Image (cartoon, rainbow, N blue to C red; front, side, top):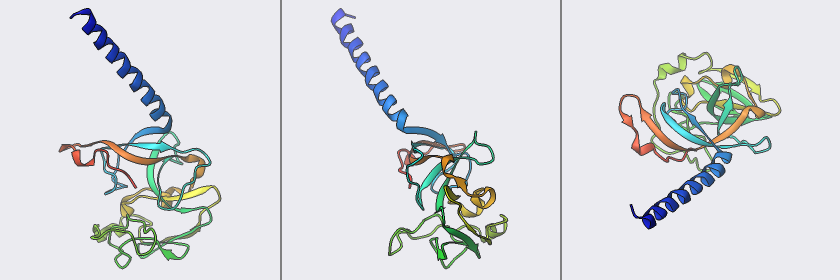
Length: 210
């Protein structure tokens, strides 16, 4: 290879390397990668989804409806993903399979406790899309708190989290409200997704999470 061409190639490689290093240093300081190991967040997040989450500081707000990554209270070495459904001071209760926060139903498909309650209404009219995904009604019986729970009041500096796959989720109903200082990040987008049996899920790549 002529010397001039080698210089161009070398210069290009150096430029790409420096640019990649800068990008990773900025991106890595604000984001952290995680992987979904269970179906507790189905259908929003699937087993085999790899996603980036924006790191949260101790004073960053966490609100109702936010997806959050947090340190598992029973073993802080493990990370979990759930949705914050209630914040400090909120009263949480489940009656006949429907979640209530401060006395108001906090679900989609309110008239059917066998429906998928993964969408948290935002504003009026309800922003949850139709049609709803239906789960097996028998799922209400599988968990100790799927049909009835509480009421409890979320303590100060804590959040109450639940999985979107409401009837198949280990969440605050079982391990209690999560201390705010255990919440470490907010999921942003999926960068890689693989089904163990079918391979790469192309349609999920770069999917924004909400």
